[in-house]
Length: 127
Image (cartoon, rainbow, N blue to C red; front, side):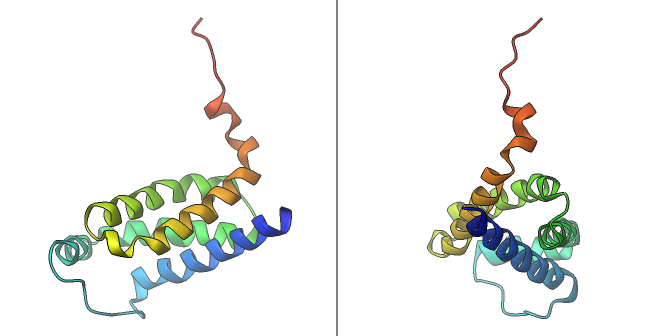
C-alpha cells in the first residue's frame, strides 16, 4: 500500500505542477469550450483569479514531489479538487473522468496521512 500511495503522490505532484505552471505560462493553450463553461473559464482568466488557483496547484505539486509538508499540500488541494468536481458536475458532466481520477489519487494520499488530520475529525464534547 505504501508504494501505491507513493505513486499516487508523485502523479498528483506531476499533474498539479504541470497544470499549475500552465496557468502562469499558458503552454497548453487551446480553445475554450463553447457556452457557459468557456464563459466561466474566460471570466476566471480575465479577472486573473487563475493565478491564485495556479499558485495553490503549483505549491501543492511541489510539496508532493519533494515529500515535505504533504498534509499541507493535501489541505491546499482539497478546495481546488472540490471546485473541479463541482465545475464538471454543473457545467460539463461528460468530462468529469479526470477530476474523479485525481480525487481518487488525492484520497489515497490523504488516507496515508490521515493522522495529520486527526484533530479535525476528533469528536469533542463541549465543555
